[in-house]
Image 1: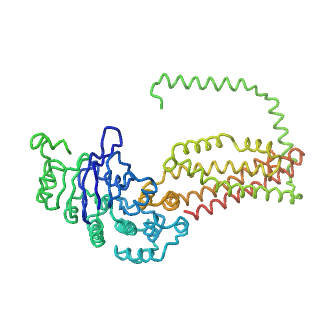
Image 2 (image 1 turned 90 degrees about the vertical axis):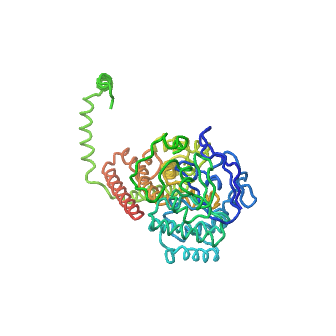
Image 3 (image 1 turned 60 degrees about the vertical axis):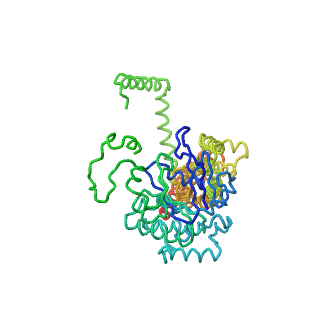
Length: 271
Length: 252
């Protein structure tokens, strides 16, 4: 379904933000990407729909190499990739319904988009999605009147409005409180499974990743260094991805940092 | 502000010396200044009472000024959109951006009166020159504000619309327009108010409107009529300002 081959990106020459990343998503599964800040998770996701232009390598969606497409081809490919953002990125002055329908902008003509004249089936699809994300009755509210959790649910509906072959999700819960985070993740993962949509999900919250993902990728310094099931994401694996730390839930929050250079000199530098 | 005390005091002394020298070199003739005060007294006394008897001439001038301001604001508002879009670095390609910024700088370099003199030379006396002058000024003003608003708006909403596979025009109407529309309308209304004021000025160089009536009354020494015109201009500007504030208040 999705095949990433040797994908690399350098914002400044010689310093790779994304370094030769390859993996394949062969079935509709929810793949969480974890790793420390600056590991290149966001760059990876944006290189797939080319909101960030990759320096080399390719991203192949259902047999089509997205990285070599011209701009018209890229727009067509983007229609098949729904994206969900950390800051929701809703058009704040538009209504919930207009935001959800904007997921169809790749399909409707300019004049229909301008006059908000969407096909009837799009509108009924939008109402269905709003119901699924628990926002029935919110269609006429302005997006900037909603709470964070509600906005992210509109974001999910907008992405699914595209009927995508792939969901790209960038830190969907980083701006939300723990309870809302779990609710949003539950809705997202439920719908992804139900619609058989493979999902790439950046997330820094490891417990959330473990409880909701089918598969976990670990990144560090732009490289892919872990690929396994949530069960395989042991404390050793976390140490390998993030560097030395006491991961047990029993460990007190204020426990002293292990001294660098004593416990594991080669990994301490990775933080 | 300046760390080095020697440099700071030195610059201050230099500035004071230059001011003294330039005042001296202006050759202000105090005798003439005194005569001017005398003449001002005579002019002001002849201004009273203001003469509103030629109200039809007055009304014609005011109507022309308002029409000039309205037409110029509307045309300027429309033409400012493409220029503003091209002058926003976050959506326009670099060469387009540079050309558009160049046009903005060039049109803002010259005061309305200078542009009006040029247009009067080209198109002759009358409101056409005035309207064109105000159009240029409006495009440049609204265009610059628009470009700056686009550059300062969040790119996140635009990014999300791009990610849906929307083409550039659709990114503009969904990702850009909703963010800048209220400010754009506010700036345009403000410009209408400014154009009413400027339309009285450009008239003085012959570009039509109430300003031209005022200029003519001065050259014919009809000072009582001049005062009537000035009072009318004050009323007009006051109304324009009131209207502009009222509309912009409602836009928020």
